[in-house]
Image (tube, rainbow, N blue to C red):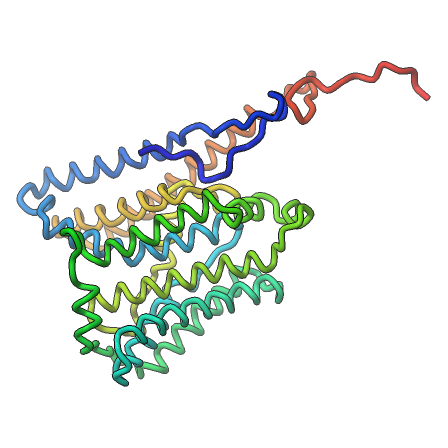
Length: 357
């Protein structure tokens, strides 16, 4: 499956207004190659356990939670923002839903509670950033501390075990041999891809990330749209809270710890620019899988966690350097020669023929 860059097709004014599709992003092919290479390393080092059904199922379950969070993070970063509070929102949502579970309200109320807590918290971020004009880094940093503190307050810093069998039986089951948690990741990814690539909302998200002022002048309600983007990120955190509570059968204020860093890393690895305006959900998904497989390889080979962190950091730096190199080359290729100024259509700018007035 190939993917063009997650932006709407552009119009080439030099060809009579014909629509021209963007080329396939070769970085996605490279990312897929890295993922395959890691899988080969895992198989060679542990041929008896790595590609077993149990290990593959475990890796996909682990990838489900952070993968859903990364989908929401992709929307935020494409829109030119950042969200450092996703891990804390996951913790707050998980604690709140497990608190509801202890009151015997049932699994449906638990799910709705997690989704509402995530959505409302994300909207608070977005509204204060858009209308309160708080810098996204500062706002989400404050929410990261506040949401984690509130989660500790609600839970009393105690792990809350879920005894609601209807909840665990449903989310820990399998459908067509695939865990329900993985189906949840697939569903969020498909919906996110459609919204980002096939709707007006997605086109506006790219436009705001590319140039917010130009988007405002074109009639887009930048403030409200930005608030909605952060709401999407919060909603994804609520879904991730359901996944982690189902997987661990417990809610704790430590859930989602440092997930914001893992999510941002996966998004950057996937080719989304931190400056906004360009991104790929398929790249984000591959980035999540790369880190998941890497963790599995290190765990099965009994390597220390500090080595895993060093490897992650090296991969992130390499991805950012590759982004900057690619942007620099494209900038040089697209800039007109100094002796041949170009107009909007790419043709040489017309020279004045009349006399000076």
